[in-house]
Image 1 (tube, rainbow, N blue to C red):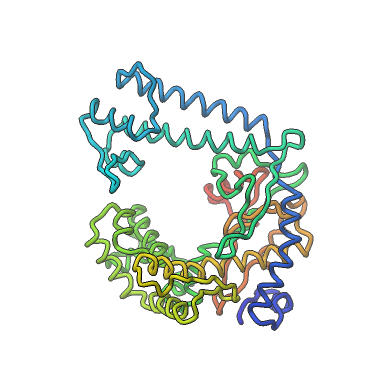
Image 2: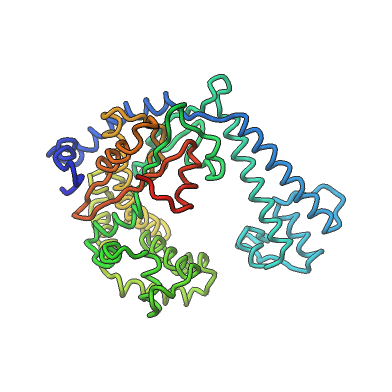
Length: 421
């Protein structure tokens, strides 16, 4: 078993020991009880005055767009721009455009359809809906906040089959990036946001013993851009940002078994073109496809899939004669192997950080949010990276640490390209 920190492989071996996989997972979940309780008790500080001001600003902007749209369309009666029926009526009567019918026989006015119409007015409807969604998220934060303490508290649950940790009462996973500005660190402290880089892609590369991904990362290249360059036979530096999105869709979609129809929807292309892309991708990176096939075969033989560390997920439909049920179970098998392994590694890191006395605020998928004293940021970042940056099958899983006085500041520093110590 290869799961070690460059600086402290002995400590990780001691953490995991030489126990059978099932015993390792059992011990991990027992250790996680204290971690979850500490995060639940700590909560997150909320700047209520800033939150209320943001809610007011967004509500005014939304009302302004609604008034502008109604004036442009000449509508006096009440209308719901979130309603597909109402928007379909507007598009038909005012713009002479009819959206596509769904399989249920109804017209769809989803974001993709509206953007495809390529009209400033439909873009404004999309913006209105974005604001409505954002406003709903902000209101949910306000409702979930303990007004006396100025904090959000939630309960962490482990009901996800892959082993991922989620929250109930309030979902930290659903806080929009723009709303994270209202979450702030304790006085005299800052946040460290420790995030695994390209986590799941590095895990699938490690477990499949792939060389293509590894060579790309070792050269310091952008994986999504490199995939497009090789598939299209064009120089790496000439791959556009739009083409890079194609590479990202391929890397993530095909890692989890996306088929041509799904890829075609994401790329707004034909199923035939999507299938050609899939075939080319698989021919250039065969080890990943072979790995997925091996995972599915083992699941058929045993009736379950398991993470690298032995967390099991039983799949009763993996041999079902119903092709839809069987395909779903096959995707779940691969998902368990990749995302489940990622969840286990994050939990190992949470346990180590907690045992060393770090104040963990929360975790969201592949990232962990901690509070540290301002005068200890540099040494804390160094230590956090030493704990979290591990190797899986000789593939390093690097971590980027960003800091800020608010949770949102951590993302802003990333966008500005600021390298943190």
